Amino acid sequence: MSDIASRVKAIIVDKLGVDENEVVNEASFTNDLGADSLDTVELIMEFEKEFDIQIPDDQAENIATVGQAVSYIENAK
Amino acid sequence: MELKRVVVTGLGALTPIGNNIEEYWEALVAGKSGCAPITYFDAEKFKTKFACELKNFNALDFFDRKEARKLDRFAQYAIVASDEAIKDSGIDLDVVDKNRVGVIWGAGIGGLETFQDEVINFSEGDGTPRFNPFFIPKMIADIAPGNISIRHGFMGANYTTVSACASAANAMFDALNNIRLGYSDVIISGGSEAAVTKAGMGGFNAMHALSTRNESPETASRPFDATRDGFVLGEGAGALVLEEYEHAKARGAKIYAEFIGGGLSSDAYHMTAPHPEGTGVVAVMQNCLQNAGLKPEDIDAINTHGTSTPLGDVAELKAIGKVFGDHAKNININSTKSMTGHLLGAAGAVEAISAILSMQHGIVPPTINHEHFDENIDSELNLTLNKAQKRDVNVVMSNTFGFGGHNACVVFKKLDE
View (tube, rainbow over the protein chains, first blue to last red):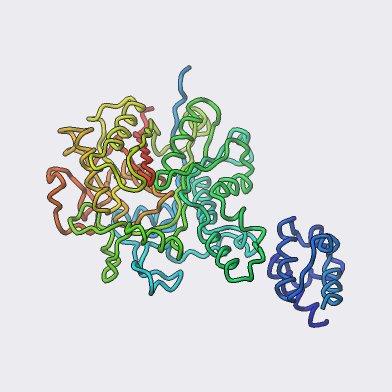
């Protein structure tokens, strides 16, 4: 697992209180990991803080799974 | 239309002297102080370095980590105390008509720590607003009853009353009237507060409202003592299940007391200082007696607001003298804030609970830490000083007053079948 992927997963485990094993690339924040709309906003903010990037709202809407978050951040860095 | 009768069928408490009803009552009777140096943050630079914090409360004993993180402490306390009260009431949540169960809660401030931390975080940044999406829903004072209803599915009336330190009594009186008028069968009422934070301590210190007896925190809350120098900040929650009498009887509920009335008034005098003659306080007790259909002679005990402030304590006792006349000296007057500190918006709830339990047990908890008589206080009054007193209490009153001049009073009676 890349460094970015492991940091993303750690944030998701922390914020959503889910088991690490559940945080697979295909997992959807809302459908699989129990996030509501506010959780999703908080996750995006945490990614911005952790990786020192800006994720515009229209881009954030397209980040719905763990894998999408990892690849967005990898491209943004 | 005939008003319905309302009874108390469940109690819950999370206080600086006990984390449930049983512990709370034992500590009250024993005269235990809940005051100690502040542990939540470094208070070295604060004028007051002590408070009545909860002891051994761990949110993770009650919530999973994700849930706990989304709740300010004042909402966590509300849920924990109301869970205890609901369980104590024996209400079958699978049977009760949840459309007729409400939650009317009191909070003087709400999520002060959440507000403080988010604003600190913002001010330390570059001005870009990066507020947590849970900031507002964690902070707002009405989120406590909102969360209680979500937890249990109660779909009746749901809101928070805000009247500073009178908040919980306002909530209870609203709940009483709501059930009296037939709108609800059951209302979970009470109050919670979690203001032992840097902003809370600093703010109250700036008003010179708090005791600064740093050399002896456990004796700092000393209502009616001549050397009292301000209140001690407390925190926690009290919860009461209030239920329509026939509804309670039909399910064979244990009944602690009948909730027979309440009163409200305003000082209309000053933002924070009490009226020196206690005119608003006289009015609130008279309103309460009238609302409950009582004569002054019917009152056996009064749980005072009694915060241990120089002006407030004297004004309240003067007002009791005016309302009750010669009977005042027959009343067991006490201040449980001497032990719990001042729970602000939760005070009315934890003090009403003490008042109700004093009827049940025939014991009035003491006003601790009294050493010096204050010549401004009528020496004939029985202030239940330092030791609990046995007393057959049939009718008990509980006073609370809030900054802004809000006064609220509630009265409970042993149930006449």
